[in-house]
Length: 109
Length: 165
Image (cartoon, rainbow over all chains, first blue to last red):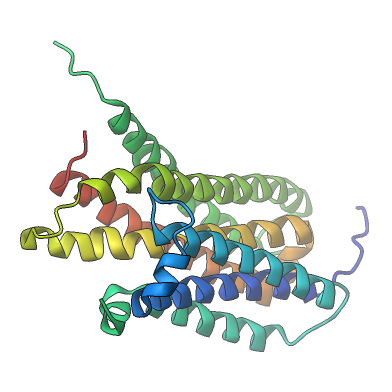
């Protein structure tokens, strides 16, 4: 059988943490757009979709940039995967909260 | 007698019953693949075969998830947004959860599914020996399914409550 080159867990940790950062960003932008009218207007990148366009484009961009940065940092590193995964779950939970209507609607119109 | 579908209805079918349903149905296969991807359960030849299947399956799911949210946000949602009668209190529940929550939380699915697909491809057959990573992928994959499930269920109800033709 072909011998596999040993891999560090850094690339997996980077991809997983970046996904959490992307989810959190969407939650933050959703709440921000609800709380502040100027933010809502600024996020209107594409009128038919409204502020949803800015939220999704920016969240995707932040996710990709975070992934690229974390990957370059941890490409050959062995990191504390368990800790990073817990942080990721917290970020996803916060993102979930930020996108939940009963939460974000309490911040404004 | 045939009842023709409008262009909007065709897009709703592509978005919900085509792409969205494909993602949700494929989850069971992906979960079973990740769950049983262990050296003690599968032979060496089995791991090689499963690696290829899991790589292809998770990438197809990630791509389908992206196409679902992009078509939903940029093609389907503008029709609902233009149509929605803001003064209709009877529809407020469906607007709040059927559209407000659904359209946001659905975007979690492609980011999470892409992370899973990337790790599966990057680690290949080594993933079978990386128990912590494999378990983390199962959790992320399930969260992606949950997010897509919320969107799918509310989307299905919404097409009944607020049919767009």
